[in-house]
Length: 297
Length: 267
Image (cartoon, rainbow over all chains, first blue to last red; front, side):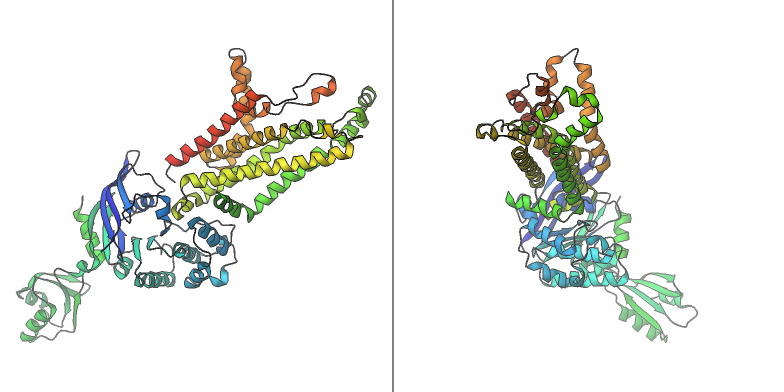
């Protein structure tokens, strides 16, 4: 697969604070790449360096194998942090200005406005837009030049649940067209739902990188409940149980490798117990994220 | 290059403040330069002796070729309005953070700066053309006998005036890029002349040769004060080449400092 972005030893110091420390990363064509990390972990600084607005202290990066320059940036659509536009210009005029800067035809403007459902408000000044509309206009402007790479930094920040769902659908729609997307977020649920790969930053250090599919792998956790008084003791006797704990009125059984939910069900059934609640829980990205962060020092 | 100019003009032409400030600038310049005779008449009617000592109709304020230098010198005072407009235009880019977005969208930092410099040039040229037209019209109105030999003498003050305005606007742009806050930048811009004058006054006793090299001084020296000639004194009726060299150097330096600052800062 073609490499879109290569980062080698990228470092940024703000005075004594090290915002990004020796970062190495690769993003391939067609990936939806999630960048995770707590607030202040260096996500936006990294993206700022990749988009030429922050000068790196050390290290290199390359887009499409080229030394970074402003012509390459025209092939990338990016929204960093907040949507930024001229408040006194209308949405339409802001996009016209963007088209001039990106040197792409203005004919795309109606299409992208339609995509983000802002056609009705295009003649209104940007400052009259609601936050959700501003975010959507930012996405429209990022899509204006039909970029091969899209960078979105907290695109659902401050949106209501409906707005979040809309943006998520939009990202999926864009990803389905084969575009490479780099998505920085601390909403893990969001990343798990849309991303194919992810990386975790902590205090400027890369602590994990890999496919999202890997998250579900590993030991299974079964949540089980039955109307039996000594269920926990019984569960402990199951040969596949690594540990048993009580949570929210149910028992959480962490299974050993090669054991699955049906084995536990079978075991209980043989003991003459019929469960009224049995769920195989996939490990969530959130859980894994917290594990990764607590492991990394 | 035209593409960059179009980008910056697109930002400005939909900005109401731009039209208000430019409108004020061109109105004030138009009215104040065209009403010199009215001012003299007012002086004559207010102060009894003024009229008796001096026949105001004999003062050839608007006669060719005097009118060129007179108007150019007067108009120089109003460049501060254009300077304020430039400051607003650049500091807006910082407060709205649109400079950052422009770079993300694919302008290089130099292209961004160059688009502002080109706008400065357009504003300066517009100002020159305006003064030229006003001078031409008032000249034809007030000059009793049109002598074509005189009509187009002393025009070298127009390129000097262009350099004066453009250097000043480059200074305003640089100040905006360094300070980044509109209010503070405008105050500094307004105080520049005074602050420099104080420094010059203090340095005058020790290093008098340094005086012409000060930036504001060099800008002012491009177009000399013309009115002494009406008090029967010799005036400098040519553009001093040294002043041109110094002002031009400052102009280059201002824009170069802007570039260095922009290149090195994290946006």
